[in-house]
Length: 351
Image (cartoon, rainbow, N blue to C red; front, side, top):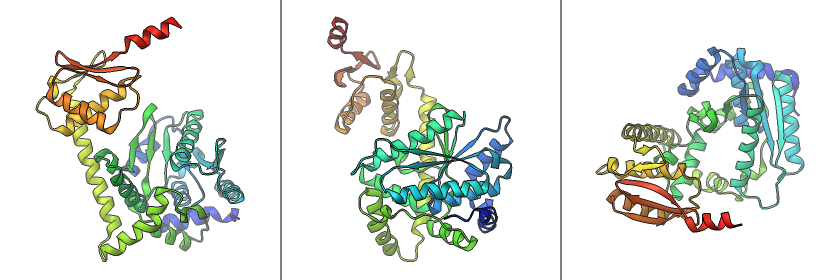
Protein backbone atom coordinates (compact mmCIF):
# COMPACT_ATOMS: atom_id res chain seq x y z
CA UNK A 1 0.00 0.00 0.00
CA UNK A 2 1.16 3.51 -0.79
CA UNK A 3 2.56 5.48 2.15
CA UNK A 4 0.52 8.67 1.91
CA UNK A 5 2.79 11.07 3.76
CA UNK A 6 5.82 10.27 1.62
CA UNK A 7 4.56 10.93 -1.92
CA UNK A 8 5.24 14.69 -2.06
CA UNK A 9 8.84 14.14 -0.97
CA UNK A 10 9.17 11.24 -3.42
CA UNK A 11 7.91 13.51 -6.21
CA UNK A 12 10.48 16.16 -5.30
CA UNK A 13 13.28 13.57 -5.26
CA UNK A 14 12.18 12.18 -8.63
CA UNK A 15 12.08 15.66 -10.15
CA UNK A 16 15.64 16.26 -8.93
CA UNK A 17 16.71 13.04 -10.68
CA UNK A 18 14.71 13.81 -13.83
CA UNK A 19 14.79 17.59 -14.34
CA UNK A 20 12.51 19.29 -16.84
CA UNK A 21 15.32 19.42 -19.36
CA UNK A 22 15.15 15.61 -19.63
CA UNK A 23 11.54 15.69 -20.80
CA UNK A 24 10.54 16.03 -24.43
CA UNK A 25 11.07 19.70 -25.39
CA UNK A 26 7.95 19.90 -27.58
CA UNK A 27 5.82 18.82 -24.63
CA UNK A 28 7.44 21.15 -22.09
CA UNK A 29 6.97 24.04 -24.53
CA UNK A 30 3.28 23.15 -24.89
CA UNK A 31 2.88 22.83 -21.11
CA UNK A 32 4.55 26.16 -20.38
CA UNK A 33 2.39 27.93 -22.96
CA UNK A 34 -0.78 26.30 -21.63
CA UNK A 35 0.10 27.07 -18.02
CA UNK A 36 0.42 30.75 -18.95
CA UNK A 37 -2.82 30.85 -20.93
CA UNK A 38 -5.99 32.32 -19.40
CA UNK A 39 -8.54 29.86 -18.08
CA UNK A 40 -5.99 27.22 -17.06
CA UNK A 41 -8.02 24.13 -17.83
CA UNK A 42 -7.45 20.81 -16.09
CA UNK A 43 -4.82 18.34 -17.23
CA UNK A 44 -5.96 14.72 -17.33
CA UNK A 45 -3.24 12.18 -16.49
CA UNK A 46 -3.67 8.52 -17.43
CA UNK A 47 -2.68 6.72 -14.23
CA UNK A 48 -2.56 2.93 -14.05
CA UNK A 49 -0.28 2.75 -11.02
CA UNK A 50 2.58 1.27 -13.03
CA UNK A 51 6.06 2.76 -13.11
CA UNK A 52 5.61 4.89 -16.23
CA UNK A 53 2.31 6.51 -15.28
CA UNK A 54 3.44 7.00 -11.68
CA UNK A 55 6.60 8.77 -12.86
CA UNK A 56 4.48 10.93 -15.17
CA UNK A 57 2.09 12.03 -12.42
CA UNK A 58 4.87 12.76 -9.93
CA UNK A 59 6.89 14.76 -12.47
CA UNK A 60 3.90 16.85 -13.53
CA UNK A 61 3.10 17.55 -9.87
CA UNK A 62 6.70 18.54 -9.12
CA UNK A 63 7.68 20.46 -12.27
CA UNK A 64 4.43 22.44 -12.72
CA UNK A 65 3.43 23.29 -9.14
CA UNK A 66 0.95 25.93 -10.26
CA UNK A 67 -0.99 23.16 -11.96
CA UNK A 68 -1.32 20.85 -8.96
CA UNK A 69 -4.87 21.88 -8.21
CA UNK A 70 -5.83 21.27 -11.84
CA UNK A 71 -4.37 17.78 -12.24
CA UNK A 72 -6.90 14.98 -12.59
CA UNK A 73 -5.60 11.40 -12.44
CA UNK A 74 -7.68 9.04 -14.59
CA UNK A 75 -7.59 5.38 -13.59
CA UNK A 76 -9.36 2.74 -15.67
CA UNK A 77 -10.00 -0.74 -14.30
CA UNK A 78 -10.29 -3.20 -17.21
CA UNK A 79 -11.75 -5.78 -14.78
CA UNK A 80 -9.61 -8.52 -16.32
CA UNK A 81 -7.30 -9.19 -13.35
CA UNK A 82 -9.67 -9.53 -10.41
CA UNK A 83 -8.29 -8.53 -7.01
CA UNK A 84 -5.00 -7.33 -8.47
CA UNK A 85 -6.83 -4.72 -10.54
CA UNK A 86 -8.81 -3.61 -7.48
CA UNK A 87 -5.54 -3.22 -5.57
CA UNK A 88 -4.20 -1.06 -8.44
CA UNK A 89 -7.17 1.26 -8.01
CA UNK A 90 -6.63 1.57 -4.25
CA UNK A 91 -2.94 2.32 -4.80
CA UNK A 92 -3.75 5.09 -7.29
CA UNK A 93 -6.31 6.63 -4.94
CA UNK A 94 -3.79 6.63 -2.07
CA UNK A 95 -1.07 8.30 -4.16
CA UNK A 96 -3.49 10.97 -5.36
CA UNK A 97 -4.79 11.59 -1.83
CA UNK A 98 -1.24 12.20 -0.65
CA UNK A 99 -0.51 14.62 -3.48
CA UNK A 100 -3.85 16.41 -3.22
CA UNK A 101 -4.71 15.40 -6.79
CA UNK A 102 -8.22 14.51 -7.89
CA UNK A 103 -8.59 10.86 -8.90
CA UNK A 104 -11.38 9.65 -11.18
CA UNK A 105 -11.81 5.92 -11.65
CA UNK A 106 -13.80 3.99 -14.25
CA UNK A 107 -14.58 0.35 -14.99
CA UNK A 108 -14.95 -1.57 -18.23
CA UNK A 109 -18.55 -2.71 -18.01
CA UNK A 110 -18.27 -4.89 -21.13
CA UNK A 111 -15.14 -6.70 -19.93
CA UNK A 112 -15.08 -10.42 -20.65
CA UNK A 113 -12.65 -13.31 -20.60
CA UNK A 114 -10.54 -13.33 -23.76
CA UNK A 115 -11.13 -9.64 -24.47
CA UNK A 116 -8.80 -8.28 -27.13
CA UNK A 117 -6.16 -5.58 -26.85
CA UNK A 118 -7.96 -3.26 -29.26
CA UNK A 119 -11.23 -3.47 -27.34
CA UNK A 120 -9.55 -2.77 -24.01
CA UNK A 121 -7.70 0.21 -25.46
CA UNK A 122 -10.85 1.64 -27.06
CA UNK A 123 -12.75 1.35 -23.76
CA UNK A 124 -9.90 2.96 -21.84
CA UNK A 125 -9.62 5.97 -24.12
CA UNK A 126 -13.39 6.39 -24.29
CA UNK A 127 -13.32 6.72 -20.49
CA UNK A 128 -10.40 9.16 -20.61
CA UNK A 129 -12.04 11.42 -23.18
CA UNK A 130 -15.44 11.34 -21.45
CA UNK A 131 -13.80 12.30 -18.15
CA UNK A 132 -11.99 15.19 -19.85
CA UNK A 133 -15.19 16.37 -21.54
CA UNK A 134 -17.01 16.55 -18.21
CA UNK A 135 -14.33 18.98 -17.01
CA UNK A 136 -14.14 20.86 -20.31
CA UNK A 137 -10.50 19.81 -20.46
CA UNK A 138 -8.58 18.95 -23.61
CA UNK A 139 -5.14 17.72 -22.48
CA UNK A 140 -4.50 14.04 -21.79
CA UNK A 141 -1.02 13.15 -20.50
CA UNK A 142 0.29 9.67 -21.24
CA UNK A 143 3.32 7.82 -19.86
CA UNK A 144 4.75 6.33 -23.05
CA UNK A 145 8.55 6.11 -23.14
CA UNK A 146 11.31 4.99 -25.54
CA UNK A 147 10.61 1.26 -25.13
CA UNK A 148 7.03 1.97 -26.23
CA UNK A 149 8.34 3.65 -29.38
CA UNK A 150 10.34 0.57 -30.37
CA UNK A 151 7.41 -1.75 -29.61
CA UNK A 152 5.02 0.39 -31.64
CA UNK A 153 7.37 0.56 -34.62
CA UNK A 154 7.76 -3.23 -34.65
CA UNK A 155 3.99 -3.73 -34.37
CA UNK A 156 3.20 -1.31 -37.17
CA UNK A 157 5.89 -2.65 -39.48
CA UNK A 158 4.08 -5.97 -39.23
CA UNK A 159 0.88 -4.42 -40.59
CA UNK A 160 2.51 -2.29 -43.28
CA UNK A 161 2.06 1.20 -41.86
CA UNK A 162 3.29 4.34 -43.60
CA UNK A 163 4.97 7.37 -42.05
CA UNK A 164 1.83 8.48 -40.19
CA UNK A 165 1.71 5.14 -38.36
CA UNK A 166 5.44 4.69 -37.89
CA UNK A 167 5.93 8.09 -36.25
CA UNK A 168 3.72 7.06 -33.33
CA UNK A 169 3.57 7.66 -30.46
CA UNK A 170 3.90 11.41 -31.02
CA UNK A 171 5.00 13.74 -28.20
CA UNK A 172 2.27 16.28 -29.00
CA UNK A 173 -0.62 14.69 -30.85
CA UNK A 174 -3.61 16.72 -32.01
CA UNK A 175 -6.85 14.78 -31.63
CA UNK A 176 -10.47 15.34 -32.70
CA UNK A 177 -12.64 17.88 -30.87
CA UNK A 178 -9.62 20.03 -30.02
CA UNK A 179 -8.11 17.45 -27.67
CA UNK A 180 -4.35 16.87 -27.41
CA UNK A 181 -2.36 13.86 -26.19
CA UNK A 182 0.96 14.66 -24.52
CA UNK A 183 3.87 12.27 -23.94
CA UNK A 184 6.79 13.97 -22.18
CA UNK A 185 8.65 10.73 -21.34
CA UNK A 186 9.53 9.76 -24.93
CA UNK A 187 13.10 10.93 -24.30
CA UNK A 188 13.56 8.36 -21.51
CA UNK A 189 13.94 4.59 -21.34
CA UNK A 190 11.70 2.41 -19.20
CA UNK A 191 14.64 1.17 -17.11
CA UNK A 192 15.84 4.73 -16.49
CA UNK A 193 12.41 5.65 -15.16
CA UNK A 194 12.31 2.59 -12.90
CA UNK A 195 15.80 3.34 -11.59
CA UNK A 196 14.89 6.97 -10.87
CA UNK A 197 11.69 5.94 -9.09
CA UNK A 198 13.56 3.42 -6.95
CA UNK A 199 16.22 5.99 -6.08
CA UNK A 200 13.46 8.39 -5.01
CA UNK A 201 11.98 5.74 -2.72
CA UNK A 202 8.87 5.01 -4.78
CA UNK A 203 6.97 1.75 -5.12
CA UNK A 204 4.57 0.98 -7.94
CA UNK A 205 2.19 -1.65 -9.22
CA UNK A 206 3.24 -4.38 -11.64
CA UNK A 207 0.70 -5.80 -14.07
CA UNK A 208 1.45 -9.53 -14.22
CA UNK A 209 -0.46 -9.86 -17.50
CA UNK A 210 2.25 -7.81 -19.24
CA UNK A 211 4.52 -10.86 -18.98
CA UNK A 212 2.08 -13.13 -20.77
CA UNK A 213 1.72 -13.62 -24.52
CA UNK A 214 -1.96 -12.74 -24.60
CA UNK A 215 -1.51 -9.59 -26.71
CA UNK A 216 0.78 -8.74 -29.62
CA UNK A 217 2.46 -5.88 -27.75
CA UNK A 218 3.19 -8.19 -24.82
CA UNK A 219 4.76 -10.79 -27.15
CA UNK A 220 6.92 -8.14 -28.79
CA UNK A 221 7.93 -6.76 -25.38
CA UNK A 222 8.71 -10.19 -23.97
CA UNK A 223 10.19 -12.05 -26.95
CA UNK A 224 11.13 -9.71 -29.80
CA UNK A 225 12.47 -6.54 -28.20
CA UNK A 226 15.09 -8.25 -25.98
CA UNK A 227 16.39 -10.25 -28.94
CA UNK A 228 16.53 -7.12 -31.11
CA UNK A 229 18.42 -5.18 -28.43
CA UNK A 230 20.85 -8.07 -27.97
CA UNK A 231 21.45 -8.30 -31.72
CA UNK A 232 22.27 -4.58 -31.99
CA UNK A 233 24.97 -4.95 -29.34
CA UNK A 234 26.58 -1.72 -28.17
CA UNK A 235 24.29 0.45 -30.25
CA UNK A 236 21.57 2.30 -28.36
CA UNK A 237 18.75 0.80 -30.39
CA UNK A 238 15.99 2.38 -28.30
CA UNK A 239 17.44 5.86 -28.82
CA UNK A 240 17.83 5.02 -32.51
CA UNK A 241 14.17 4.04 -32.78
CA UNK A 242 13.20 7.28 -31.03
CA UNK A 243 15.34 9.29 -33.48
CA UNK A 244 13.77 7.51 -36.46
CA UNK A 245 10.31 8.21 -35.05
CA UNK A 246 11.13 11.92 -34.87
CA UNK A 247 12.49 11.99 -38.43
CA UNK A 248 9.42 10.18 -39.73
CA UNK A 249 7.21 12.72 -37.97
CA UNK A 250 9.09 15.52 -39.75
CA UNK A 251 8.57 13.79 -43.12
CA UNK A 252 4.90 13.20 -42.34
CA UNK A 253 4.39 16.86 -41.44
CA UNK A 254 6.10 17.95 -44.68
CA UNK A 255 3.83 15.74 -46.80
CA UNK A 256 0.76 17.03 -44.95
CA UNK A 257 1.87 20.63 -45.55
CA UNK A 258 2.41 19.92 -49.27
CA UNK A 259 -1.08 18.45 -49.53
CA UNK A 260 -2.56 21.43 -47.66
CA UNK A 261 -0.92 23.76 -50.18
CA UNK A 262 -2.42 21.84 -53.11
CA UNK A 263 -5.88 22.03 -51.47
CA UNK A 264 -7.41 19.30 -53.65
CA UNK A 265 -10.53 18.85 -51.48
CA UNK A 266 -13.28 21.06 -52.82
CA UNK A 267 -16.76 22.09 -51.60
CA UNK A 268 -19.39 19.42 -52.00
CA UNK A 269 -17.04 16.61 -51.01
CA UNK A 270 -15.16 16.50 -54.33
CA UNK A 271 -11.50 15.67 -54.78
CA UNK A 272 -9.78 17.63 -57.57
CA UNK A 273 -8.04 14.86 -59.49
CA UNK A 274 -6.46 17.30 -61.95
CA UNK A 275 -4.69 19.12 -59.11
CA UNK A 276 -3.03 15.82 -58.17
CA UNK A 277 -1.88 14.92 -61.68
CA UNK A 278 1.84 14.20 -61.80
CA UNK A 279 2.26 14.51 -58.02
CA UNK A 280 4.13 11.84 -56.05
CA UNK A 281 2.04 8.83 -55.10
CA UNK A 282 2.51 9.64 -51.40
CA UNK A 283 0.62 12.91 -51.92
CA UNK A 284 -2.16 11.28 -53.95
CA UNK A 285 -2.49 8.52 -51.35
CA UNK A 286 -2.92 11.06 -48.55
CA UNK A 287 -5.46 13.04 -50.55
CA UNK A 288 -7.51 9.89 -51.14
CA UNK A 289 -7.35 8.97 -47.45
CA UNK A 290 -8.60 12.47 -46.56
CA UNK A 291 -11.43 12.22 -49.09
CA UNK A 292 -12.54 8.82 -47.80
CA UNK A 293 -12.51 10.09 -44.20
CA UNK A 294 -15.03 12.78 -45.17
CA UNK A 295 -17.52 10.31 -46.63
CA UNK A 296 -20.27 9.10 -44.32
CA UNK A 297 -21.34 5.82 -45.91
CA UNK A 298 -18.38 4.17 -47.66
CA UNK A 299 -18.27 0.86 -45.78
CA UNK A 300 -14.99 -0.93 -45.11
CA UNK A 301 -12.67 -0.55 -48.09
CA UNK A 302 -10.07 -3.29 -48.24
CA UNK A 303 -6.40 -2.52 -48.78
CA UNK A 304 -6.59 -4.05 -52.26
CA UNK A 305 -9.67 -1.97 -53.06
CA UNK A 306 -7.94 1.18 -51.87
CA UNK A 307 -4.95 0.51 -54.12
CA UNK A 308 -7.23 0.00 -57.14
CA UNK A 309 -9.02 3.27 -56.44
CA UNK A 310 -5.67 5.01 -55.89
CA UNK A 311 -4.46 3.83 -59.30
CA UNK A 312 -7.63 5.22 -60.91
CA UNK A 313 -7.16 8.59 -59.21
CA UNK A 314 -3.52 8.71 -60.30
CA UNK A 315 -4.49 7.96 -63.90
CA UNK A 316 -7.40 10.40 -63.77
CA UNK A 317 -9.55 7.97 -65.73
CA UNK A 318 -13.32 7.82 -65.59
CA UNK A 319 -14.26 5.32 -62.89
CA UNK A 320 -17.28 4.08 -60.99
CA UNK A 321 -15.91 2.09 -58.05
CA UNK A 322 -18.19 0.37 -55.53
CA UNK A 323 -17.74 1.46 -51.92
CA UNK A 324 -20.26 -1.01 -50.55
CA UNK A 325 -24.01 -0.67 -50.19
CA UNK A 326 -23.79 3.08 -49.62
CA UNK A 327 -22.67 4.01 -53.12
CA UNK A 328 -19.75 4.52 -55.48
CA UNK A 329 -16.52 6.46 -55.84
CA UNK A 330 -16.94 8.09 -59.21
CA UNK A 331 -14.34 9.94 -61.26
CA UNK A 332 -15.61 12.28 -63.94
CA UNK A 333 -14.84 15.76 -65.26
CA UNK A 334 -11.53 15.84 -63.41
CA UNK A 335 -12.97 15.15 -59.95
CA UNK A 336 -13.64 12.27 -57.59
CA UNK A 337 -17.00 12.35 -55.82
CA UNK A 338 -19.24 10.03 -53.85
CA UNK A 339 -22.29 8.82 -55.74
CA UNK A 340 -25.01 7.48 -53.46
CA UNK A 341 -26.68 4.17 -54.21
CA UNK A 342 -30.06 5.31 -55.52
CA UNK A 343 -31.63 1.87 -55.20
CA UNK A 344 -30.71 1.65 -51.53
CA UNK A 345 -32.01 5.13 -50.82
CA UNK A 346 -35.25 4.34 -52.67
CA UNK A 347 -35.66 1.16 -50.64
CA UNK A 348 -35.17 3.13 -47.42
CA UNK A 349 -37.82 5.65 -48.44
CA UNK A 350 -40.21 2.80 -49.23
CA UNK A 351 -40.04 1.38 -45.70
